[in-house]
Image (cartoon, rainbow, N blue to C red):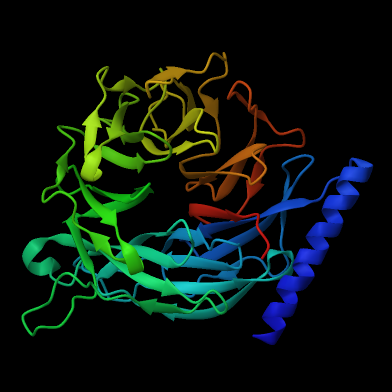
Length: 408
């Protein structure tokens, strides 16, 4: 680990010098490191983000092997020293898991260069999502199939403690529940066919696509998840595709029953004991000429909501776009006034991030393996094309993306 520590110290010096030079000469410097997953070749595209233009340039040795099959989710550690990649794994001819999913840990070194550290397996199968807690001490990983999946059809959340010096992961047992042998379970059960979860304050909300519900947990001490209400939260007759729990509100994207319309955004208010209350004004229609909303992102100041529309082959609708909304004080959404809203982006977007300085936003585009960058007007929420072009090549069948802008 000596070289790794030297790399991080060197990176800190390089970034610090770049900041000074950029401020004094109005030049450009790197403000963040972006990592884009690609499922076609099981790779991670590493890119540096330019402060002055938002332009992306490829890192040394990029793309990097993802150390597993079908990388679908990525998380950067608090402090920006480690990258956690969720490799979903493969399935056999019958559609069953080959039990080869894992969590790959990479050290983020000088200039954002990745060095593989180790892989870890989860208690269940087919991991699909990961996030750290606010302090960065624990990594929460969502399995779409819990160990008892054959009888329950449920998924699970596995909790790992993170060694902040090495990135090593240590599984945290479930202190509340034991198996038939009197042993502590190594996971926390959630609902059927879960796809993602989001933390909001002291609560974790898991989106279950199998029965269109949300499974809530409270965040306890020592990484534990605590049952707050002994039931799931029904979403109704919807086709829920993503959940956003940033700030004072929770938003669920609903793709609807067909691909012919833009679907809707369902606003909720988090309540006591990790409940979710439907807002009085109800669902908000997505913007005209949009289709298949699959992801949403709230900006860092919780002023604007951006909905990523995957698109459709129907020529009557925009291919792939971002719908932009103002978040009112009540949590309701109003479309941002801009003739360019919704904003066109690359083909088949699936994920979105904001850069650490809040100047730019980026989407990873599955169909063409690209990243689209947009300038973010913090006063209006409007998005615009970057000065030197907004499309950047990443890696085949780009899934999700993450960004590190911190140096510890």
